[in-house]
Length: 413
Image (cartoon, rainbow, N blue to C red; front, side, top):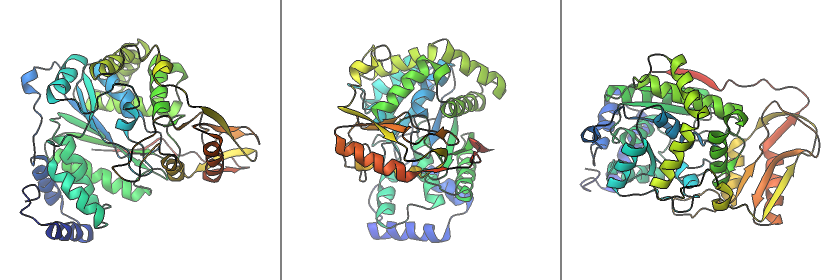
């Protein structure tokens, strides 16, 4: 009814409103998810004779969350196949596709054959949503957007999973983020969403594990598009120098993907394998092959600065007092990026891939007055002054050492 238009906009809006106010039983959520999943094509990898399981990871989004770009090639280098269908950024959260599209030539919407060939030959491909997969979700999401029913756990669950399960997965790992930079800014909501996703996905026949992770500070040391690709390349090329939180969460998610898909029986051996493919350079090589297979340069890893050119102005954002970094309003940091066009407020907005922040401070770090909170990569001094104002407003500094949040709060199946 959603796709053939036999349901009118008014009826669909009424349905969304009813679900928003009354919720859905688990069986109803599973049924809605399956119907939406089968509203278009469901990918079938069986005829490619892949020599490993098909597994994916999805994050509910945050600021500086570049994990997918590092994770897909790592897991592929470990012997799994990762057909990752990702989204563009909207609001304060950045989009994996926007980051990848800062690479010259990278085709985020290849034809079906190119996508399948890349997955088979490289082991992973990160591309955008196609109109063939879960088309019912596109219309229902647009309806939710105009009827203020976006924040319904039942509808979020079916929206995420209809697209993911239509990718023909053997297993799925979810990263449900919570905190000031997450969609679920409070823990209770994150837990409700994670429980719903794990139950509905497993009930739909795809073993799924949800990790609830912290988004009360920027993930990694950069925010933006091109700057985050550079951080991903640095991570894969020189893992010993990687941001610790980014490293730990990537290893943990990758190990869970290998275990739930059956490549490793326990997380410890999976984690060892993950670190081995990173340290040997195999994950970096896999990333390089994915980029070139999808139209990007063949030498991106070795000549990143040739393709991801620095901005006209790289300006330090200075602290106005000394003390410990005690908290961040991560949503505000994300929205300051949107203001400078590194993100979008509507789906039709174009992106300025060069704008970004690097060298971000971490919670718990001591900083002197006049020391750098970050570096602004911008077009002019006005933009640099804007970020100086926004960042000093969004980052709280105090005399006391703050209590650090755990990186991973809970794992649900």
